Image (cartoon, each protein chain N blue to C red):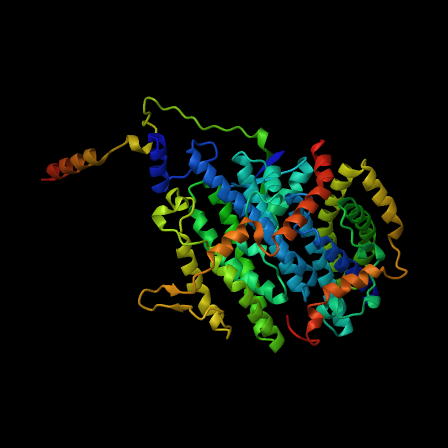
Amino acid sequence: MSELLLEIADDELILGWRDSEWTGIAPFLEEDVAFSSIAQNEVGHARALYELAARDLGTTADALAFDREPSEYRCSELVELRLPEWERTIARHVLYEQADAERLERLKASDDPEVAGLAAKIDREEIYHRLHAEMWHERLKDEPRYVEALEALRPLVGRRNGHSPELTTLWEEMTSVRRSQPAGTTW
Amino acid sequence: MTEQEQGFLEYVQSGGQVETDDWMPDEYRARLRKFIEMHGNSELMGVLPEREWILRAPTLQRKLALTAKVQDEVGHSQLIYRVVEDMGKPRAQCLADLVSGKSKFHNVFHYPTKTWGDVGVIAWLVDAAAIISQKALLKCSYAPYARIMKKICWEESFHILHGRDVILTLMNGTDDQRGLVQEALDRWWGPLMQFHGNPIPADEDPMLLWRIKSQGNDEARQQFLDGYVPQIRELGLTVPDPELRKDEETGRWHYTEPDWDELMSVVTGHGPKTEDRLDLRRQARENSAWVRSVLLAA
Amino acid sequence: MIYEVFRQERKGQAFQHAGSVEAADEHFAESYAREQFGRRGESVALWVVERGSIMRIEEFVDELNRNYHRVDGYPLKEKLKEARERAVARDR
């Protein structure tokens, strides 16, 4: 079970990290605020999942989030890509939410009541993410660049044959402050 | 001043509030709109120094807190630009003037951030300086602005606590971490002392006369020093101004006179990071123009 | 389009104007109002309405000072004083 938990946690962490890159520079202010909440929720989901996994593994959520080598993360290539174009970010958002919904259903059916309970909570928050994704999809679906983005990214859904080099670049930046002091330093 | 303008002046000076469609003297309207617009610009530009650190936050909690703080600042700019727009200047025009350098934003957002220490110092001290000004705006004679200031001040309350938490954690940590804080403080002290603006006698300050601000620049600076120098010193940090001391008799702080020329130069677009940050804004805006067009074509 | 947002801080309280958001349609308006005025649990409910749908009324006429249905139409101090004095006199 820790495996699936880590897979989802890593996806949510990296996706949340990527989505948070839009804070301050989204296409317009209202969307900036809304999308930042989505990013924060994703990191929040990762945190809750790490906390659950951390108990079984005898470690901490922060250690799981930051202190593994890039190759040890179980996230998909889809979430690792840096997508500074809005149409690609939304395309990924739409594709990810669809795939994630199915995965969450499996987790909600878990024998472990804590896992099932957390999955249900996450699912309830994801309702708003899905509405947001659908709302944008409706508006952009006739835009050629968005259609292209969907086509380009769709093959990456569910693919976990290894990591994109972009993960290492992200990981190095993400952990640069943390690694500047010995392990176990409080920040 | 015409009789009508005089009447208006007396009205606001005795606490009267003004709504969007009320008659206003041209001078009041012009000063007010420029002031509010600069505030909106500042919230939006203030995001940029902090954004980089969202990506490098060293724990999940810090990551979430910093993202939420920056999100609040974007939200503040949204609220503020709406007020400006209702006064007649569209948001698109405000943003165009911002990126072209035509309109201004506060000095502190023209400077670089170099370390995690800056993240703490900004949230603790820069935000503190800003909150002092913002609290004084709660009584602004222009009611739509006073009303959003209430929400803004409420949201800022967690920013300061987050800043203090970051700083205290660093000060309780390793020598390197303590070093980060002192080094950041050394760099930010100058801009902080300039933040509230050069001293203008109260009876010569149009912002006070029109009750747009309810506190003079010097008064705000003194309030900042009163509140925060003790907090800085009790942590064993040194304020990088050998002249800084409080006159116990008058209760006033003495300090090295800030460099007002530097302030003027910076806010007119010559700060160390001004160009880079305006470029970033301009680029982001250009790249996403198609999104706004698609949404407008309902 | 501009959508005005009214928020209720706690159940039982009045809805108050909180601000406005610019949105392409109702769906976006809902998303943006929710985020701008409710992401911190600061509101238990929001009313969101397109600005054009709001009717403003600011002119009220009372040329003939109709105070018969207001508290300020009933200055009773003098009458009360007189009535008390009369009651005292009757008692003697």
